[in-house]
Image 1 (cartoon, rainbow, N blue to C red):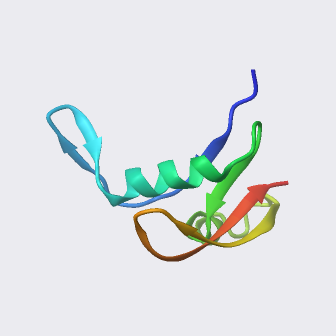
Image 2: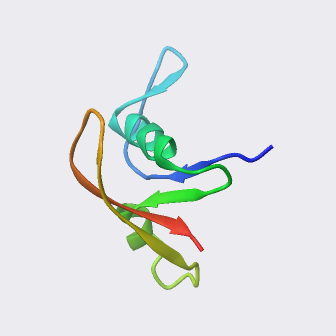
Length: 77
C-alpha cells in the first residue's frame, strides 16, 4: 500500500481532544496534492530544514482550497 505524506508546521489548537486550526487544514490540503508514495512539504517546512541535507524538488505554486494565498510546494527527492 502506497501512502501520500505531507509536511507543514504551524500553530494548532487542542479542543475537546481534537487537534484543530489552520495548520491542520493546510496540512490536509497539501496531502490532497500528493501522489501515492510522494512526500509533499510546504515552503515553510523547506525553510525550516535548510542545511539538513534533505533534497526537495519544486512542485510549483499552488492554490489550496480554503487557505488564503498561493503556496510553494516541494516533494522529497
